[in-house]
Amino acid sequence: MTKQNGYSRRDFFKGASVLAGAAALGGMGAPTVGAAAETAADIPRRKLGKTDLMVSAVSLGSGGDNSDINVIKYAISQGVNFIHTSTGYKKGVAIQNVAEAIKGQRDKLVLGLKITWAPDNDTALDTALETLGVDSVDIAFFNIHKASQVSDPKYRLGAERWIKAGKFRYVGLTSHKETAECLKAALDQGFYNALMPSYNISMEEEFLPIFERAGKAGVGVVLMKSGRGLNGDAYYDAVPQYLATPGITTICKGYGSFRDVQKVIEASRQPADAEVGKRVREAAAVTMTGHCMMCGTCDRVCPQGLPVADVVRCSDYYMEHAEYVGTAFLTYAELAARPQASICGDCDRCERACPNGVPVMHHIRHAETILA
Ligand code: SF4
Ligand code: SF4
Image (cartoon, rainbow, N blue to C red; front, side):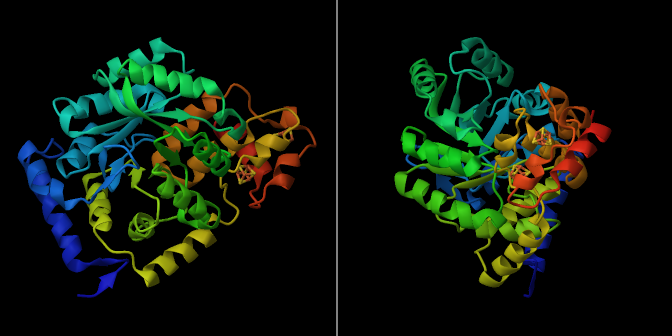
C-alpha cells in the first residue's frame, strides 16, 4: 500500500473508523472507559528520563485555543496519558477544562503543571491544584526564559520544599525564549527531571546536542510548539522524526478535533522515514526562514528592556496560527510593557540584531495596530 505524507490509506481509514465510533457515542460526547482499555496499548509509552513516569509518546498540551473538554477526553480514551496545563493558558479557562476532562481519571494520568509564579508562592500553587481538582501533580515545570536565572537557588529550594510537601514529585523547566541557553543551564544544575522547550525540526543543529546530553543525563525532553513551520500534514510527517530523535521523550501539543488526535496517534506509530524526514526538514527550513526562533537576542539588545520577542510571538500567532489568535490577544494584553512607535522612535536595533532575519519592526507595528 503506497504512503502519502507518511500515511497509508489503511492508516487513514483505521483512524476514520475510530472517529466514527467516537461520534456514535453521542456526537462530540466523551468516549467510554472501555474504549480507553481497548486502545491504550496502541500508543507507544516512554519513560520520562530517570523518573518512574511512563508517558505516551504524544501528549496533550492545553495552550493556545486547543483545550476543548471533549477533545481532551477523547485523547485520554485513546491512550494519551500525559496532560500538561497552566493557570495562564486562555486566562484560566484551559486548566478548568482539563479539570473537567480528567474527573474520575486521575489515577491513569500523568499530570504536568507550568509554574508561572515565584517558587515560594504557596497560595498560587494551592489554587492551581484546587482548580485542577487534584491534591498533587506528577511534575511541575518552572517557566524560565532567561538563562541567567536558571541557576538561582530559589528554584531548587522551592522545588525541594514543594516535593517534600507532596505537591508534585518531579520538577522540570520550560522555556520559549533564550531556549537553548536555558536548557543547557538547566542541565548544568543537575536537579531537573525534564525539559520542555519550544522547538521545531528546523532548529535541529542547535538543539540535537542538547537533547542528546539530556538523554545521557536521564533528563526527559517534552517538546512544545513543535508544529511551528509545519503546515497541514507536514506536522504529522514530522512526528515520527521527532520521536526517533535521541533524547526526545514525548511531543506535547494541543489538538482542535478528534481527527487531529487520531492523526497524531497514527503518526506516533510510524517509523521515522529518511525520505519523509528530508522533505519535512526542507519544508520547515523554508517556512521558518524569516520567522522567529525565539532566541531572545532582540530582548537582550533593546536599550529600553522591552519584551520584543514576546511581541513578535503574539504577532506571529495572529498571522500564522488560527488556533492561537485568542492567545495572541491575551498575551499581548498581559505584557507589562510593549515596543511601540512612540517609544522606539528611530531605533531598529532589535531587527538588526536578529540572527534569523525576522522583520521585527513590522511585527511591532502589526501588533500595535491589530492586537492593542
Ligand atoms: S525576533 Fe529574531 S532575535 Fe528576536 S527572538 Fe525571534 S529570532 Fe530571536
Ligand atoms: S526598536 Fe524598540 S523594541 Fe527594538 S530595540 Fe529599539 S527600542 Fe527596543
